[in-house]
Amino acid sequence: MKILSRLYIALILFFLYAPVAVMIIFSFNSSSSVWVFEGFSTKWYEGLVYDTTMLTALEHTLIIAVLSALISTVLGTAAAVGILAIRKKVASSLVMSMTNIPMMNADIVTGISLMLLFIFIGNLFGLNESLGFITVLAAHITFNLPYVILSVMPKLRQTDANLVDAAMDLGCTPFKAFFKVILPSISTGIATGTIMAFTLSLDDFVISYFTCGKYQTLPIVIYNMTKKSVTPDTYALSTIIFFVVFALLIFYNMLQSKSEKQAAVRKVGAK
Amino acid sequence: MNKKSFGNQLLAAPHVVWSVIFIVVPLFIMLYFAFTNADGGFTLENVKQIGLYKKAFGISILYAAIATVITLLLAYPMAYFMTKVNISSQRMLMMIVMIPMWMNFLIRTYSWITILANTGLINTFLGKLGIEPLKLINTPGAVILGMVYDFIPYMILPIYSVMSKIDKSLLEASEDLGSNAFNKFRRVILPLSRPGIISGITMVFVPSVSTFYISQKLGGNKTMLVGDVIEYFFNAGPDYYNVASAISMVLMVMILVCMVIMNRFSDDDSEGVII
Image (cartoon, rainbow over all chains, first blue to last red; front, side, top):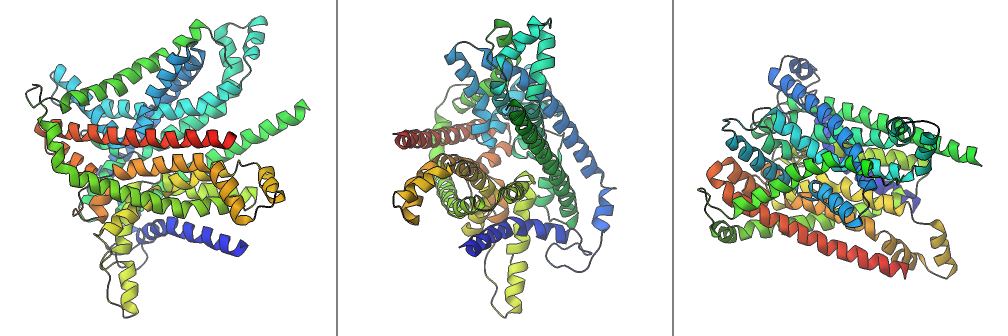
């Protein structure tokens, strides 16, 4: 049984990673084929340095990912505190269901509805080009928000409200109490939300596709490349992204296990 | 933390304003487009036209349903076996399952062309064995394979996370009460893992039924899914926004109905488990 279950896990992992392996192998192909491997070469990686379309797109992607992650973290953290403070159950559940819409809706519907909004606003102001940097940023913030709120909220619920009172009794202003007491205890939740928002933004294709106009992000450029025939440079770029995401996930994992250890230490200390 | 002061409530205000502008208003604009013509006059023409795309809707639902079932059948044993290895390996496995999820799905889908194409890796290999090349790419099977492959982590992870929280003493209790392995699975593990199955099914079905990239790349433009129809119309220019909005609306309502039904399922069953 044990051998069988291990074998099954191995088979599923093989299924998950076979295309990834194919991509990595062919990114080192010395010819421009993605069918036949003709020899080892790193020329596609070297070529990337001079590919201005790709580099600009990478720059766009990083700008959007960093900005949308930061803005949605600030908005989302404030919202999580606010939503938990709403006294009326109906009101808070209404806000939560509204928040969750982009998470539940199909990406294509979210993307199209946002595009229609931006075009509508653009027409209102008589703009020729209504889609661009601002619209893709707004779209990314919108789909990142629920993920930030959902990572911060459980941490907030675990935080003892009396701590804030205690801090204020000891002379903190409410503002200072938030930064001294609440923020440290929800910091892992915030970090989780930020990293999630960053990776989601980095990877998004469908919503960006409908909202970016000429401000093309990397997935859009990759999409345009796969429309024509693909050469190994797309695979080379994806391999790099793969390892960046890999590193981010390891970092995230370390962060989580650190917070778990801290929690364990606190528990032992309490005893 | 549940300090319920008025000042704190205000912190939700920017988010509420943002969500109204960028979530609620766009959906109403879509609704407006769906029921108007290019000049802005009220019409039911777009909604009537949806009938023409019955086939696309049918195929999308069929393929997404098949893909969801296959994904569930593959992912469930995987999630179960993952809970059987030691804790640090479980962490590792979870990461390994997650990584492809964060990778650009365009490329993950595209690599399958390298594997499945007429001159691709599988057929080259078969050719060396002297076997006739198989028609793998541009078939319904390839599209379904693409859906299964792209979304299987979304099925494994929720089922795994629910299963790993099942109280071991419940399993021991059922053994003490004379359950064999099959009954232990059917009466304890399966009902308790149902919430994970439900969220896995939604997380696989929704992106599958609305995809447009997978069908274009692996189905070779032969299979038009709803997503393809919508994308086609939006690229065709502003004149077609109305009909595309109508189709998107129907897609959204369809997904919503599916989710309500699914949630009904999970609520009833969790109550059943508690009783």
